Image 1: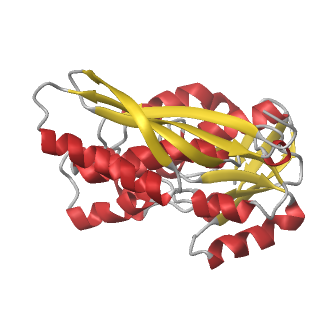
Image 2 (image 1 turned 180 degrees about the vertical axis):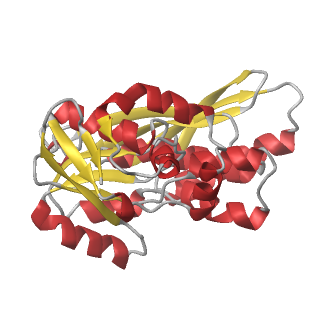
Length: 291
């Protein structure tokens, strides 16, 4: 828009992933806001996007919207309006507008050999929500996944501001492998991951070992499996890396010399971020190496 201001826009909405309507509203809003943070921008205005079945009680609708409002307020943005339609299944999300400085604007490509890969949230929410819908989880067992999904990426994005970030994305529906594949293929590089450094939700891993997996995980495998060298990685662990996430963390390719400073800044802010690998020169067809 000018030499020191650019505008970014995003939209995201989906059906409920949890039973509680207020929590669903929070998760959907945090997920939509995440793309703004992944671009190095700050959210300013939001529009509600909502589909409502005819028989959905009014108090449920209000609770979904209240959850979204509270999360947008936490982000320092405002809800300026929105649009609703009738549909057979409830859906909710946001269209978000944010602003960034053109020189601090992140893309999901641009990673350079030598960059450190930092991931700011654990993996496994897709499996956890699938298991929860099947009635196989106690409420307290689902609580850690809900905390992850309702947590804004605002704090992680603020920690990145003092670092040299060459590429950034949020880990959502394509899973860690799908979003990392987009990053490395778009950057003309490859990535080597330390699988033991990736924070996997313990309960999700238990169910992955039992073969309880969401349909989206298989779609993600078909999308980019051909470009992944899994090495000796356990099948269930590999499955989790393809698990579609809801309101997942930021995945950032940070200049190696800034990696330690970045992790320290995140941990000082209470985030359990991890250095999960590094960017390398592209070598052959396999763009992601798991070791």
